[in-house]
Length: 419
Ligand SMILES: [Zn+2]
Picture: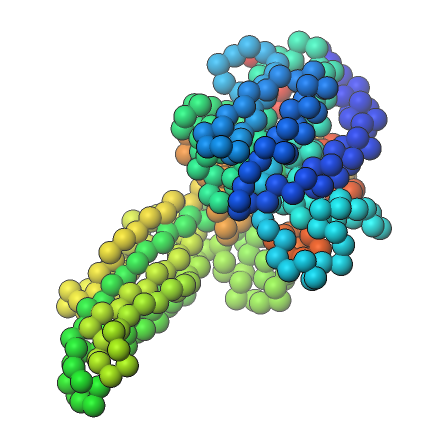
């Protein structure tokens, strides 16, 4: 059996290469949209060829390319799988950047550029971990996998979801290298539920309003108000998540200096994001619609939320209805899962303290993996505050730390679960 210290030593010897790889990736503008990944996957193919790593490429649409690598023991599915996206969002206004967005410059210990945090550093770190495990662990007793996907920033349909639905990957454990920072481990996410509500009214001449006619816009505003009040309700969170829910709320409330945010992970997040309605200024509107984005805490489902909204609409005599809805239930990985325990243990060894288990309010690719039974977590380098913004950056030290923790965690997980 390979020795953990040996692997860690090899990793540290190659840490400068890891930083260089991150810089090289940032220098390739893999912006999505438009989302053509030909150049960056070309670079990665060369890199993998030089490193002696085999890969498969999937291109369901021109330029939308996923690379998938596996190594280790020959078994049906990946025991441990790393996932990351290689696309980045557009840079916004160039003049708001104080550095070249595609320069990959390092200034005072930070590596700058679009995608540095989200998530080329995470991609580079997981590539390096995969490489070290493959090259230096002789007789690696489990199969490991690495997928680099092209379209996370536009929904993941042709990337992660393609791998799961069409290629049929079913990893047991998954680490997604999205920017959580080296000291936070994200184990679950709120559900997302999007609905459109349509309200019917009755038209009349404006000069007779409000005495005659039934104003659909005024009704839909009232309904919006009532739906917002649902955010005051508190869910009964699953026993296993109680600590994590409290902790995550406390941290986010501190970060935004908003005490009410401490309830974020035990209540609904609600946004009326779009409104349409009416036909003309001098007509009492006969129709109105709102699109509402609701994020669901652990303990409730889409059905629970639909019921809450329908109870409100019931007061409007059939004139208000949900006309479309879609979404996903909240998901999480059991805090006792071996992948989480391995990362906690490894972080203690590498950094001297345990990473904090955390939830996220937004949706991640983790939900697709959890749906098919994988234990998925998010752990990657980054500075979350600058993601999708100007002067995006990542601490060089954070990249190395995450890599070391993930290598050690992989060793812990695989060596204590030989096939
Ligand atoms: Zn991302």
